[in-house]
Image 1 (tube, rainbow, N blue to C red):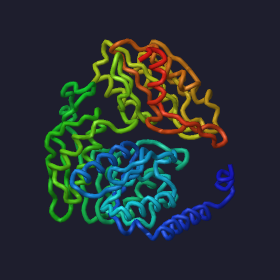
Image 2: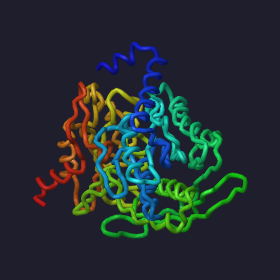
Image 3: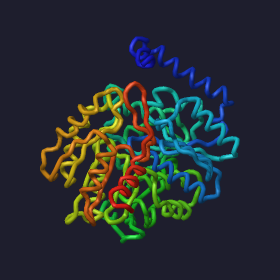
Length: 435
């Protein structure tokens, strides 16, 4: 409440100075650790956490000491703890403290998820970034930034600050903007031959995906194109092709061989809360973080295509993450669910100080029953998940989106309650089926 009042009444330049000096103080207290380790910053709308996980694995496979910080966890080599802060990019003191822990553990690299809000609050300051990675850009946080262009410019400030290496998804329609910033070396990754993505069969209940004809272009004095060999990813979806390519480009930029990068990305079987298969039988239950329209559609497309749901139902539990923000997306989320889902259950996510029933109604307003057989509006998220499980038959797929592996549900007046979609699935499944 106090923070919101300060934002409302204090001049913007005072708030900006406050954030800047807080960043300086955090770095000073911990001895400017961001200057004593090579930091890779990963930004974009989607895929940041997965790219961080891929990168961590690549550096480990190369025998390097590495730390990483994402919305999922804090990790130093093999030692990890969950990110319980409900912040993708923690505050200045938390980041500087973790940087100091990584330096004290003799880590050579730290992979850091960088957000637009974090950049606006100078959380990236006083860190000497070795490289900046751009994954993609879609409308998000539009209301807080005052428009998509401002959101894009906030992301661009990371590339403006990083002068050494830029790694950019050249297939993204906003790539030219990020390419406009100067760097000693640029790595462009692309995968325009969509036809080469496909299922290679089932392994332990999950689909293995293979792709080829991907390219990474290195641009400096002598441009060079690297054809990435056929990779067998255990993570489904075209979006994970791009995430893997971003991480491979990071590895190459640091002198790690293509063979090591390939071996590392092929080993990853699951990313917490990202297309995570929670139950395999008698029907699949998957939890994913998708909370913007494009991400939601990509998840549904992947499941519909690769789990061959033409004759089985896709049962969808969704809401609209974050009360008080990005209200524009709510009917669109319902509209997308309507195009792919047989049964739709709209429920509560993180309403904060907004009326959760109003949010549910706005999401549901996009459902016109074009594809969906039934629409349910259930305020209690546990009851919503339970309903989805009771609707499923053998061979169906239940997909629960919006929270992924997040450990909290955020309610009014700053109240948080412990939450984990995956745990709730297992608990309710046991109650229903006695398994």
